[in-house]
Image 1 (spheres, rainbow, N blue to C red):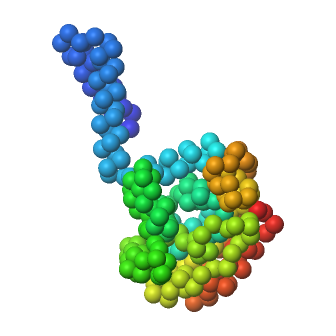
Image 2 (cartoon, rainbow, N blue to C red):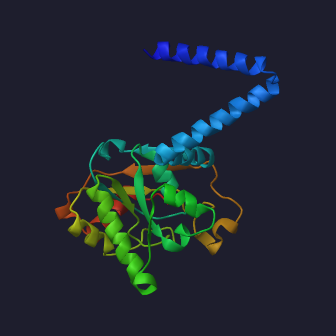
Image 3 (tube, helix red, strand yellow):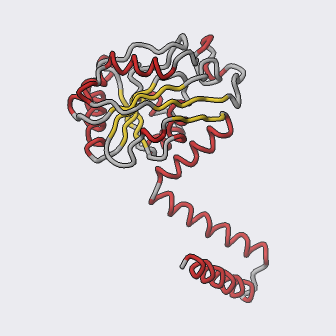
Length: 252
C-alpha cells in the first residue's frame, strides 16, 4: 500500500510539474513553487503536531552540541500520567530531556525565562508551564499547580526540577516541598532522573559566567540516567532527592 501511495504521489508531482512548465513558467520558478508548497505543508504539520516538531528540534540541538547517553528509557511509561523529577544543572536541561525521551513532556519553568522575547513562542508551543514563587506572584504559582494537575489528569508526563533553580556549585540542591503538593493532589508514579557532566558547560552557572563565557565541554558525553518509577505513597521531597543523588553518583 505504501508503494502504491508513493507511486501516485510521484505521478501527481510529475503531472503538476508538466502543467506548470507548459504554462510558461521557468525551471527556477518551478523550484520556487515546490519550495513554497513544502513550506505550506511544513506549517500545516506544525499546526497539527507542534510538540513533535519541538522534540525534533530539541533532538537536533542536543546532538549538535552534546553527545547524549540515555539509560533506563524503559522506565518511562508508554502511556498514562507520570511526574519526572530531575536535578537542574544547566539551561539546556529541558532540551536534553525533551530530546532524550520519546514521549512529549510538559516542563515546569521559571516564569521570567518563559516570558523571554523570541523564546516565549517556543515555550508556549512546547506547552511549558510557567511558575513563580509565592512572594513573586502567588496567583501565577497557584495557576501553575492547577495546570500541572490538569496535564497529569489528561495522562501526560510533567517534568519538575524540584531544586527550584540551577545549581550554583554543581551539587544537587535540596528539593522543595512543592513536589509533594503535586503528588498529594494527583498520586501518579514519580520517575527520578539524573543529568551528569553538564557542570562547567556553557549553559551552567559555574564561575558565574553563564552563557557569556567561552563555551566549555562542547560535544561532551552527557549521561541521562532514568531510575525506576516510585509509587506516589513512597515519594517525598527528601526521598526523591536522595534517589536523584544516587543516580547521579560522582558525575558533575
